Length: 211
Ligand SMILES: *[C@@H]1O[C@H](CO)[C@@H](O)[C@H](O)[C@H]1NC(C)=O
Ligand SMILES: *[C@@H]1O[C@H](CO)[C@@H](O)[C@H](O)[C@H]1NC(C)=O
Ligand SMILES: *[C@@H]1O[C@H](CO)[C@@H](O)[C@H](O)[C@H]1NC(C)=O
Ligand SMILES: *[C@@H]1O[C@H](CO)[C@@H](O)[C@H](O)[C@H]1NC(C)=O
Ligand SMILES: *[C@@H]1O[C@H](CO)[C@@H](O)[C@H](O)[C@H]1NC(C)=O
Ligand SMILES: *[C@@H]1O[C@H](CO)[C@@H](O)[C@H](O)[C@H]1NC(C)=O
Image (cartoon, rainbow, N blue to C red):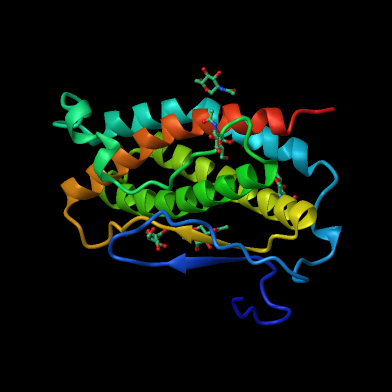
């Protein structure tokens, strides 16, 4: 049982900052820690559905635009340089037959990771490509949607499953790396994101379908 200070943030994503991130099993602590249901809006399920669908619908364009803005050698050697095999990304093993709670927890881990990664990517692109306005707009937009989604997932987890704490594994920070490495890490993460968000949408949307 982890210590959670009373009356502070209702939902705590524990940062596991490690040099080599591991996608360990979620340690879920359930208990009397969820705040009242007032936290959730009535249409939270529908909003969550829309946010996941929106992220899925815009992921490929975000990746393409990102790639275009990095120039060479990324455009011509995309498969080699942006192969996501060597970059950390949270495991996402749930499928349509998984329990709904398991799906929600996996979603939370995925989008908490994405939020942190987008933070690094946005910071790097503001530095490396400060005039790429459309890309920066899209990154900001995606981050905003992701944060809204996290808050809705937080509320669903709490309300339906009394889960108020999820351990999240984060990737490596790109801070201090070379310009090339920063571009490459962003490219790998965004490419993997395109694949995983499509899978996430396939798995999650049926769980949240309107009655
Ligand atoms: C679906 O996921 C569950 C765990 O959530 C696993 O036990 C099961 O084997 C998976 N089924 C398929 C077809 O991958
Ligand atoms: C999203 O990431 C930022 C860092 O870029 C962090 O400050 C913030 O707390 C994160 N938000 C959520 C909801 O995880
Ligand atoms: C960069 O990523 C690391 C690890 O995922 C995270 O801890 C940090 O908050 C991120 N930085 C920003 C500015 O989002
Ligand atoms: C940014 O978000 C707004 C509102 O959420 C949306 O209408 C617009 O299409 C988004 N733009 C991009 C480039 O994703
Ligand atoms: C859910 O998503 C909507 C739309 O982005 C947002 O306005 C709302 O604050 C989010 N969180 C909750 C708890 O409803
Ligand atoms: C996710 O986006 C892809 C590409 O736009 C699309 O083909 C697919 O149908 C979407 N999946 C869902 C479940 O909406």
